[in-house]
Length: 310
Ligand code: NAD
Image (cartoon, rainbow, N blue to C red; front, side, top):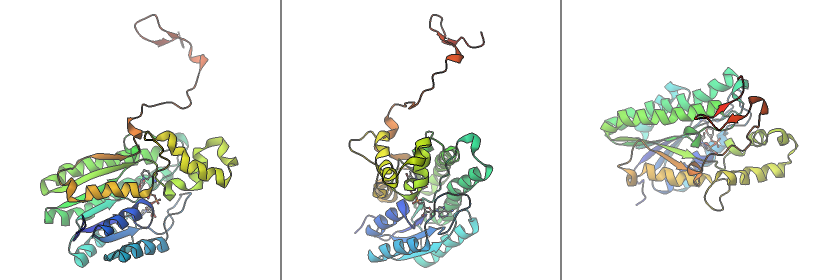
């Protein structure tokens, strides 16, 4: 018996990356799987979304584990389509025991330069898409008086990130959604929890465009080899645990299966970091600005006051 034998799990953004790793892990533990993915371009993004071939590859992985799989091209921004796929899941598999709201996107831009479009598209996918996912699966879980809903936020659901205003805001929103949904659905025995991944080896992070943006001015001159090295090794500065480069997608699947299974049956409303200890590290400004024009601070008085303007 697997830890999820007899269960059905619906996973958004399931064509590749963490969604695929979660789908494969859940199938290996006995679950039938529904995977959804947009499988096409999203306006204004400078990296590619998954393809239909990616979705088919994930489906093949699940079927190789001898589990049933429904694979659908669905955009989480489309509420009616999300409700329809949830209904189809119940019709075909009889139930939805687990939902993983994993689909997410990223745009990189400083706050003052971020366009309204770049802001909105991230909020629509990362926040409203998660709301649609919860809303689509909740009715059948409430009726069954059982369910585990797992929302993929990020460590940026609880702290800031560089060049990330819409992403950080959306992921903080996901943590808020989780708390409110856990509160409302708990009396019907439906659990809602959040995963907070640190940097994970998947295209949202490994795409060379983002890696060049993260490298700032020098990013333009980096060779492909240097970009690859930075992608894998850059997160070492982010991690506390010994010897950890960027984390594999399987690290998130290993945490997701605990939240999906009965082993966490008494757990709801939590944020679970999978971040190699990042969040316990003391904050550090990597590039503090020395500004003499602000004046010097007065250390004699009760308060530290700058001389500027005096
Ligand atoms: P990824 O880019 O490989 O996967 C995201 C998947 O979501 C893709 O298959 C994409 O096609 C799909 N998707 C995007 N928009 C969609 C939409 N509107 N409707 C349906 N599907 C859509 O990256 P990943 O790391 O596997 O991302 C999974 C989740 O983890 C995301 O929510 C991401 O924000 C979060 N996350 C990732 C990292 C990381 O470093 N990789 C860190 C923290 C959190």
